[in-house]
Figure 1 (cartoon, rainbow, N blue to C red):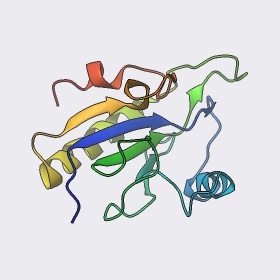
Figure 2 (tube, rainbow, N blue to C red):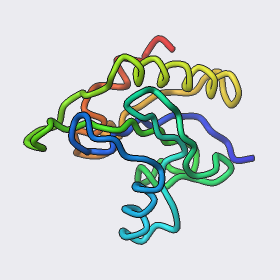
Figure 3 (cartoon, one colour):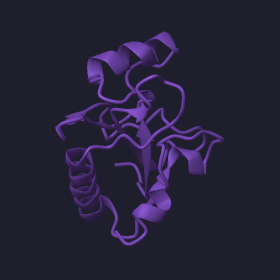
Length: 137
C-alpha cells in the first residue's frame, strides 16, 4: 500500500446546482490524457459519495502531490453563470466531506493533513479555504 499523508480537496469547477458524476469526470479527464478519473472520491450535490480512482493508485489531481495523497472533489465550485468561483457546497456535501475525511484519517493516517488544491496551485479550487476550515480534524 502506498504511504498516504494528505487529503487534497477539489471542486469540479462546474455551475452551482448542476449535477455531474464519475462517468462525466472520467470522460473529461480522459480527454485531457488521463487514463481515468484523477480523483479518488466525488461528493454529489445530495451528499452521495461516489468512488473514483482506486485509492491503491496515486491520483491525478494535484501536480507534485499525487503520490502520497487522496483526492476528493465535490460537484460545483462555480457560480451558476460561471462568472466566478463560489463555495457552492450544500449542507449534505459538507457533512459527507467531513465524514469521509474522518474515515480516511482513521483508516490511513492519524496525522494526515488536509489541503485545498489552491494550496499547491494558483487556482481558486476548491472555492474555499480547506486548510483553514478543516485544521481541527
